[in-house]
Image (spheres, rainbow over the protein chains, first blue to last red):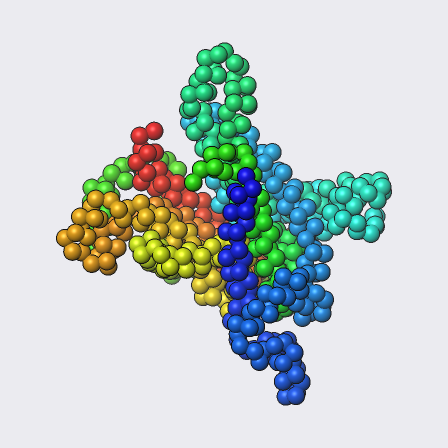
Length: 337
Length: 291
């Protein structure tokens, strides 16, 4: 097992170096040199310019510059935002909890609806529940979620008035200092009556929107995993033993189908981050996705560079965890070649 | 170069037409293609013509709506239906260019990686791993941020983030095909590497590539619309569906039709392509045929 984990981690090193190299080159690709970008539209004097070039190490060979960049990253220095002059690390991690909270609820909804939908479709294969569920899943998979979000706002916020249009909390009635950054948890810790409800109220529409595509993927994959398992001999044996249907499907079949499902859930993290950009933009959700969009429109390149790097490292980390979990659940993966 | 025998096309079609969803999708795509080709004839108005007397008119089946603005008008008095019809051109064009770019470059790199292996393989595949490590839409956004917002740059960015899927798929197929008897036989009779790659191996890797290309087509349209919506893709006043939604956003509480129809057009087009893709996959996969 130890060898398996070590092997997986070693495999990540070239990818990590590649990502940092890509992020490094990202700024090189920009028209104009970094000093021009950093100095803004007003420009600076020639002396100050030379000073800045030396200060940023831009007079060094590119390869040296890359290793300097890498060294800074390994020391946790991801540069400074141009618009706020604060370290990118701080800016990013300040907003990460909002995105994680949204992503967590989205995955929760996706699993709670997607897995049962997949199971029902598999069990009722070829009949109307299968057609209805898989038709809905394909529709969800094809959904432009930025439009879906607007439609839901139009229906539930504008017409029915059930949910708020944007934000994370009713800030007129509640105030408390952030402790964890997770609004639901902070609201609960604050002890203010109704605060948790308000936080959930703000969370529901964005998480439904963000859950749409993962839910569709999970439902489709659960169905095909279940179909595969339901054809196995041990399922027939379980039926032959006289076990009730719910036991055969809910325990014997589902447990084996779960391996696929867990992998699929893990693989959704990347697309979840991409979906978060759109969802956060629509709902003015103050997470890393909206922050990235703002950074792009302000041409705040260090922030974009740092954000891309962090997010891809996050995705890499989650994929590593999924890989390890996979090896843990399924010994054949761990020991086999 | 003939990639498929006539017979193979016919068999595929016979299986394909058994899927009702696939036929439905194909039918809707036919309608979209009709709009693409005959947009100049069937669109009632020029897509950028502004009528100051008809601002934010609702569709004709509502009380305030009136002929000939069938789906109403937007905030500057442009006919929504005409913009949707012309928008079909952009979406199909984007899908076609992006997928062609990704397929051509991806297949080539995949062939090289799988055929030569060794350091060529390592370099290409590690590069693809790096691209895959970024969430696709985010990487596309980052690239557009560097290259500058606009439709063409958005298309390059989307093609790049799609590349790894084609490279991986081609490489895996090449690896499983290259030691088959028919390839070895052509090598023995003296076929060149080039001939082996393109005439012997590639035609036998086509089925999964076609399916992947179809599904990527819908992703390309979705991603381009998302970039347009975020203001990083097609720029107004281009009637691209995503950009139309971005312009419509502020009228969400007053004019439901300017928000609803562009999104519906994206959804139906993407859904149709996915239906066709699913049906194609089943028709091209021999294992699915028997079940």
